[in-house]
Length: 206
Ligand code: HEC
Ligand code: HEC
Image 1 (cartoon, rainbow, N blue to C red):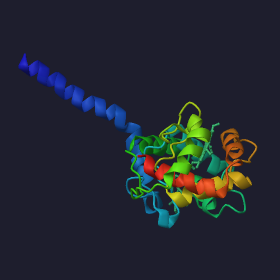
Image 2: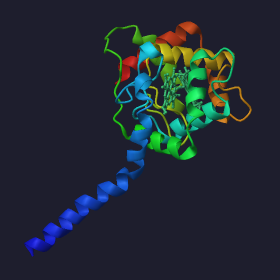
Image 3: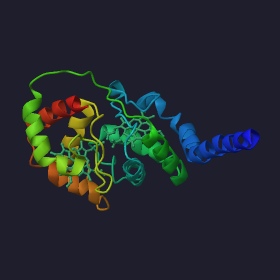
């Protein structure tokens, strides 16, 4: 009896993780070429202007990689940082994109920013909760159904750059980018001071 349960136990331990980790394992291998910029644990590297990716929604990551590859994101002449990614995404096939997106989405997300407790978060909170939370969630965790990404672990410079790019149509204006177009419209009513205030607020949510 004991022997049988032991066998069942071993069988369970050895099969379940194998099934789960097949794609993840491949994704980890693909991710080795991303570490230099996005960090060992997908925590991002502001010095390399590279955002955190860990814990981001899989479908969002996959869409961004496909957009970079097709040129719907990153091909605009004023998008210097995006250009870096169009080159890299161009080398990935759809299986590699799928696997690396799955791997990253399963990594625990961690805020790369220092916790700062200041009162300046209040104005940002008001704007964020009124104009952004419907799609990006009250805690900036994102909304998979709406295709709105998690914002809570993005560093300030990356966040501000994306808002400016959406506002100027550097990102989100390609014909086949309906999600980007939606965000482009949302970004245009927000002043640059408000963008900064929202960035500060989001950095304090976690
Ligand atoms: C040479 C540095 C570099 C390498 C290597 C690199 N990236 Fe990036 N990545 C960037 C930069 C810079 C950005 C920000 C682009 C922008 O501002 O639009 C970025 C953005 C991204 C984004 C968009 C994130 C978001 O929140 O929208 C994804 C997804 C991504 N990279 C995935 C990858 C993957 C997967 C790899 C490896 C296969 C990789 N990157 C390798 C520099 C790099
Ligand atoms: C109607 C829904 C909606 C609202 C409201 C909205 N967003 Fe978005 N946002 C999106 C979607 C969808 C995307 C993904 C775009 C893409 O796939 O490129 C996005 C993307 C973003 C990104 C890019 C994140 C990254 O990792 O590159 C930022 C930053 C952002 N939104 C900030 C905001 C802020 C700040 C507000 C409020 C002022 C806001 N959004 C309001 C739907 C929305």
